[in-house]
Image 1 (cartoon, one colour):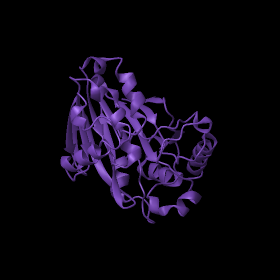
Image 2 (cartoon, rainbow, N blue to C red):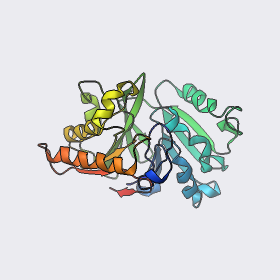
Image 3 (cartoon, one colour):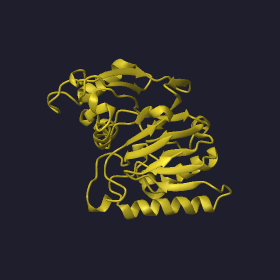
Image 4 (cartoon, one colour):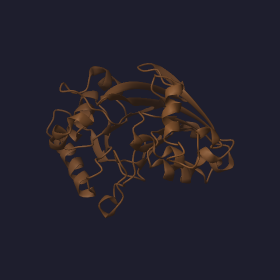
Length: 283
């Protein structure tokens, strides 16, 4: 299982000299499974570069297929959708899974950002590829090709955001972006979703101090991410979804603080890294 980061920011793209090392694109992660199956996690602006890379292979010839798991429909998780090149190649096939409110709801959300006022191609039905929308039941195992996927709804301000666990070929990972746990920390169901995975990608938008000032945004601090990793006994933690105003230096500080927090705990052996555009982790 190969996991590649294409966008690691939250809220809005933040390109510039201060974000060169970790990148300024918003959330998008690809998961390459055994037998070359592809799962895409979220479709922020990082999806554009993922799409460009895929066009060099079967997706450029209309012979590609992939699954897209959308955690929720805030802009930083869907703005790359209209700019994902493989969607425009006839013959490609995509299945898009979203929340349990149904495929009509998901279609409406994605259609609205492609209205004539915002985008020149009206409707994803005119993009070329076959794109099927499906709701994803929560807290149940679902077979997606050769992978087993389970989704759990984390609190995220006024709306939930799905976290995902993916298992394939004896390896496992979890993706938990935009998780805004309450004062009691992550619920047991969330910890169980992350339990023992080889890689946990977890929202780490803020320092604890900044999160305390922005609780209404429904996002995590690096301490939330580290505490989840420790409670769940994961092997590796990737901090993710950094605040748009954080520079590379600020993210370095997040990673260092995360490592120090784990070093000072009773849990040992968990590796902490900062997710960065272009980084591939082979599990």
